[in-house]
Length: 155
Image: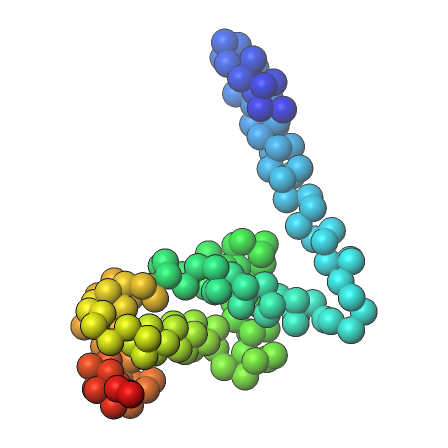
């Protein structure tokens, strides 16, 4: 299909119309299978639970990077608001809160195992590129700063 679009490039008006049509067909073909995979879900798992599993898997794979709910939802082919609502219904907390807690748990593990690691490096490792913001979020969730956490967990 892409080859057909490329072959039309020298035919100006026809190219414009045909290439748009072919692009729509290409996009349709690319998204066609998205909803097909849900018909093979085990009978004991709902679509909501499946979306939650997909969201958690997305977080596990991407928590070290800028991780946005919009990107997550787009990767699943659903609306951001729908994903957020489903996640809260199934898990009981917001998707953003889950992401924050997940990142902080990973940060705590790093701080426990590597006493000499820089706080900035820990924050960066778990997806926070601003050390001050990372420390602020860490304190809000854990109740102490990352430095205090290190000092309290020296064994």
